[in-house]
Image 1 (spheres, one colour):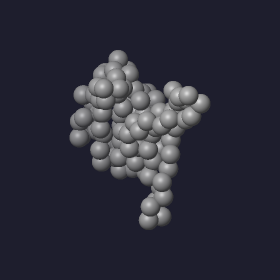
Image 2 (tube, rainbow, N blue to C red):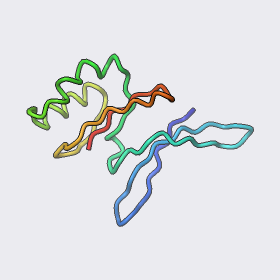
Image 3 (spheres, rainbow, N blue to C red):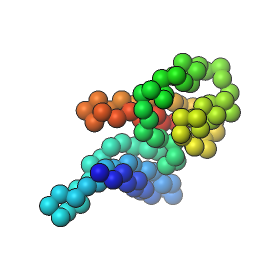
Image 4 (spheres, helix red, strand yellow):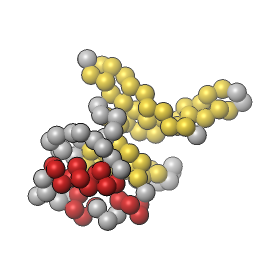
Length: 103
């Protein structure tokens, strides 16, 4: 399967969604994975072993945005969002995938 990012313009802003695409009987089939937001770098698939060591620190409201950006870079997310108002850890159990999204 191939991951594809699709953007949709509404009211002058672009909103992104992530899809898995594969060929079935010669035709491309898309499967919706999730909403990304306005910044395509704001949501990334992560592994449990990588993100678990940062969860306590990321959930703390007292740390500055600069420290959050540093931790996200260590995880592999290069999102340029300021101020960071949300950090969401999504576990898609039926797909066996974990995503970290910032907004």
